[in-house]
Image (cartoon, rainbow, N blue to C red; front, side):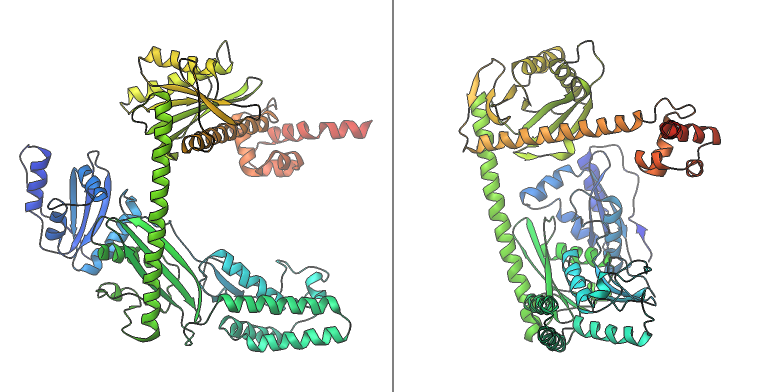
Length: 607
C-alpha cells in the first residue's frame, strides 16, 4: 500500500474557520482516510472516503442531526491520507480506529474472539473450549457465538464420548472411567483406532447427525434397564433429553453444512443496529446485536462496521450473507455475497427484520428511561429549589473506628452514573479525624482542583450523612468561594434512604414510589458501595503489608517483590528457605523472612 499525505501549503495567520475553509479547498479528488481533531489536537473521528473532497466537505455544508452536529461543532482541524484505492482506505481506517480509539467512531470490543471446541492432538485426546486457534494443536469446531453455547456443547460431548477428562493422567482410574465416560488410559492401553472412531462420531454429531447417537443411547438405556442398572438407565435417558433440547435450539436452516454469518441492519436518524446470525454446520446457533450512533451515511457506517468486525475476527466463516448494497470493496477482503433469491435471501430478510425490531425496542427503552430520569431530576430540583439539575456529585466517608479513613465520590449525569468521573480519596491525617472533618477535607480538595483546572462545578452535592456533614461541606465551599447547593441523604433505622435534608436543616420527604426517590436510592447505594469497596481494598493492603513489617532487611521494595513472586501472604508463610531465595531475596533477608514465619513452630516443637 502507498499512502500519501494530502497536499499542503503555507497558510497565513488567520482564524480557525478560515484555515478550515482553506484546507477544504485543497482536498484531493482521490480515495483516502480523514482524521477529525478537536481543539486539543485529539483525534475524535476517523473515516474513509471514495472521494476525499466530497466526503470531508459534506460535514461543513448542509444540515445534520443533533449528534452529528455536536461532533462537527468540536472539529477544530482535520488531516487526510491519500490511498491508491478504496480497499486500502478501508483497511487503513480500521487500523487507525484501533490505534486511536476515537470518541465518535464505532468501537468494538478489543480483540474480540469467539470460542471454539477442540479435540486436542494428543495421544489421549481431550475435548476443550478455547479462544485460541493454534495450528497442529488439534481439530477445531466453531466458532461458537458465546462461551455458554460452547461450554454446553462441550459438556454434552464429554458425556456422550469417552475422551480423557483429566488434565494429567492419574495413577488410578477416576469416576469418569467407572461411569463409562472415559476409556481409562490410566488403567488400560487404549489403541489409536479407538480414539479415531470416537473422533469420527464427534465430527458427525457437530455436523448435525444426531439420529445415530440417539438410537445408540436408546439401546443402551433399554439394556441397562433390563440389567436392573436403573441409575445408568437414567443417565442415558437424561443424555437423550439434553440431546433433543440442543436439537430444538439448533434448527437446521440450510442443509449444506456451510459455516456462514447472516448480517442485517436497520437505522433511525442517528442510531444504527446491526444483527448477525451465526450458522455453523447448517445450524442457527445464536446471534449478536450491535447498536451505536453513526455520523455518516448509514450504508457507509455499516460497511465500516463490517470491515472492523471481520478484520479482528480470529476465524472467518466460509460465507457472509449481506443485504443489497455495494460490496465490491468488502468482497475483495472477505467472503461476502448478496443473495438474490431463495432461502439465503430469506435469512438476510429475517436478520433485517430482527435488527428493526431490536432497534425499535432499544429506542422505546431509552425514551422511557430518559423520561423517568428527567422526571426524577425535576422532583429533586423542585424540592431543593434548583431550577436546572443535571450533574449530581455524591460523597461518602468510610472507616473503622477512625482508621484507614477514605472517601468515595460518584457523579450522576442526567440521572445516570458517569463512571469516568468517579474519584477516590485517602483522608490525610488531621488532629480531629471524625467524619465531619474528613468531609470538609474531601470537599475542599475536590473543588479546589476543579477551580484550578477551570472545570465545571456540579449542580448539586449530596453527602451521605446529616447536618454535621452538610455544614462541613458548606464551610469548605465557603472557603473556596464556590456556591454549590448541598443536601444530605437521610437514612431510617434500617439504613435506607428516607428523605433529603437541605443546607437550612429542612427535611424534604419524597414519595417512595416516585422517580426522584428511586434516583436518590440508587445514588446512595452506589456511593456507599464505591466508598466501602475502596476502604476494604486499603485495609486489606495494609493488613497484608503489616505482616511483613519489622523483618530485618525487608523494606517496601522487597515486600512488593515477595508479594509479586508468591501472590499471597499465605504462600510466603509456607515457603521454604530455598523458595524465598528464588524470589530474588539475598540469603540474609530470605533467612530473616523464613525465621519470622517459622520461629513459633520451632518454639512449639522445643516445648
